[in-house]
Structure formats: C-alpha cells, structure tokens
Length: 196
Image (cartoon, rainbow, N blue to C red):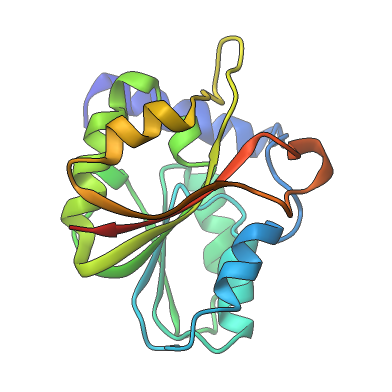
C-alpha cells in the first residue's frame, strides 16, 4: 500500500474514531431510497464503495436484497459494520482499498464516495467502476452539483461529470434531485449510468 493510501486510511479512520462524520445523514438518502424502491430483482450483486455507516445497505437488506458488498478503508468503521451485520449472510464487508478491489457487480451505489476522493483520482475512479461492473451494469446514486472550498468533500458540475463518464458509460439519468434532504437541496445530481 502506498504512503498516499496509508495516509488516506489514517485520515478516514480518524474521522470515525473521533465521530467527525458531518456528511453522515443518519438515514438512507431519499433519492437513493426512491431508486432502490424501483429495483425488482433482489438477487443482483450490489457494491457500496466508501460505504460509511451505510444506511443504504440496511435498507437494501430490509427490502430483501441478498447480495450486498460493502468496502471501506477505515478499520474502526469496518469493525462496527462487522458487528452490526454479524448474523446476516446476505452482506459481505471488506476492509480495503476500492482501487485494488476485485469482483463483478450489477449495481454500484454512489453515496459520498466520489466527492471524498481528490479530483485527480476521478479518472481512475471511472476506470475502476467500469472494470467492476458486469455487462450492462450500472452506477446509481448522487454527485454534488456545487463546488466547495478545500475538501473533502470535493464538488463538481454536471458538465464536468458528462465529460468524465462519457467514454465508458451511457447516461440514463443525470438530473438535479427533487427529493434531497434540506441541507443538500439544489446541490445534488441523481445519476444512473450504464456500462457501455
């Protein structure tokens, strides 16, 4: 593991050990919940990278999905998740670096992982997403449609994302969310991108 990745791990682990998790909504994000409610096949393989406290995974399991994988780089968080989901065979929890993770998934849920990465890693993110998705697999979730001073989070714009994803993905949706929580109103894009 490179020093840069090691520093990332230490940084993110510190956020969880000190409860400095201001991005945590305390619930499944309404746009992602609404999307999950449209999914009919409960057997699809789903990955949530940079999963955090993953209310999305809880909701997926409540809805009967049975093939959910979570990955995060923060050991403190992963220990909590292993305890939380210890008796559930429908979920796999991985402590590790998303960029070296191997697997094939029908759906990858994007919820505050992209915005946590330094912008210079975005092309690598797109390539890795493409690699991890099965044929016709999808990325669905949220991207910020605003800029931030410093970061993380790191923001961006619809035009920037269109350029970034265009080579590898077909755009099924990239629209301003109408059902964001109040603090994120008018600043989130809902995306549904299908692997070309």
